Length: 277
Image (cartoon, rainbow, N blue to C red):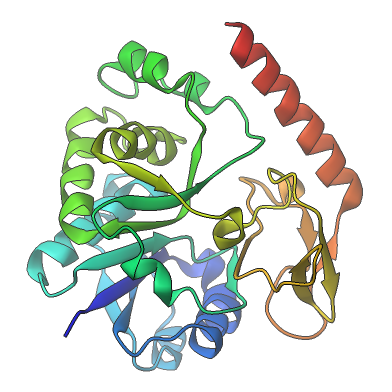
């Protein structure tokens, strides 16, 4: 029997969202009959962990080595090395994603390739990469400058390829505390290992998608009325997140229309100058 894995990492900062929104929406909407759920524990409260029933919990060994966004790659690498039964794995964010319909079919779609969503509008992330942060910085930046940015907040990997990508990330990284490394290095490696682009509804980011959407009764829909399977309220800081009171269930989700307009314009401007380089 095939076995799959959906994994995320979380600390106390986002643990309430993890259990009340990420975890609940996943359990209520995704077919997990062939899939286990793994939470990588970066300091979760014991009461939170008790509420994560039928869930695997892995305590990180890397907490004091760098940022959670970077080191979760090595956490999952360690787990998959010890648990070879998983053929495919999703690594996704746990603090700003909700699931609204089933995504289990993505495990059998192009199973030999890495699957993810690219951003239609995105900041020039390559500027974050320098020789002080990673090896071969110029080569990586030049390789990616004509590529669309893969949003690593939700990506499906063949497990054997994920293990190789994680190892290569930490062969290249010089500063494990550097912000952006978790985006740029996986982008560089995913494109080299083989990438298959999936529909943006499987990692829908209001500020970087040009598709029209609306919210009704706290549920996100595409313009034609289709429920969006995965909504990702991305943004490094709260002010950059486009949805107010983001979450799963009644009483949540209001669009910050001004923020959406400003961020889209800002990202499009960055993209224009990127093309001129």
